[in-house]
Image (tube, rainbow, N blue to C red; front, side):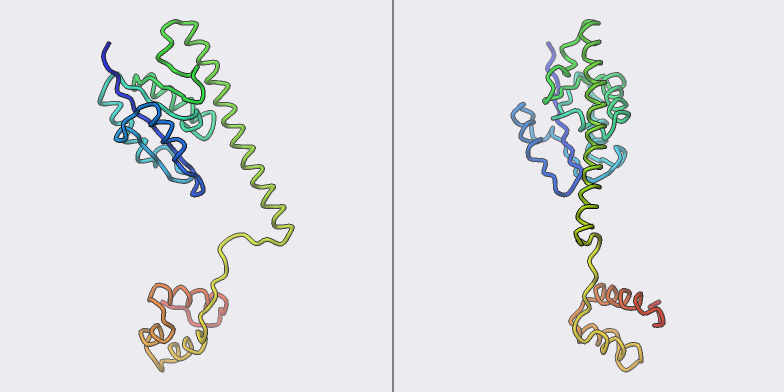
Length: 212
């Protein structure tokens, strides 16, 4: 039997997540490091997931491939996405898929009609569960934010705290008594930070002249 090319795909969707658990599962499956592809972009569509797109190009150019993922939701954020990617991989790219968390979803095992039928049913169910879990997580996050707001917790970008003597130095600069370079030096600020403070300061004082 011809040796199969085995690839692993890992995806994390937030900065607070870590790919170590998924990567370790790939290593235990004896997948070579160079064949493990990892995407770390939050909220990105599949078109924006560079490693996944690179992997699919490899699968398209080669044959006898196997794609290993930790769980079914690595293929998408909702039912429609998971179904689309599964069909593209298995039908268009003729790639077998192994889902480590659900051994029944190992397409290498299904050469008969009944086995494939059972696997498709499981896929349908798991895809739906993955979508519902995502909806539930977002709802719990929303409820948590509402509760925190009710307790006085603030969200969003914190207000910029102006440096000491900023107003004095700002007025000297705006009135033409000193250059922006001298003002930055007096405030010990880099150019980008200085103008960020200027924009913040002027946004709160609409009567001030805007920086061009």
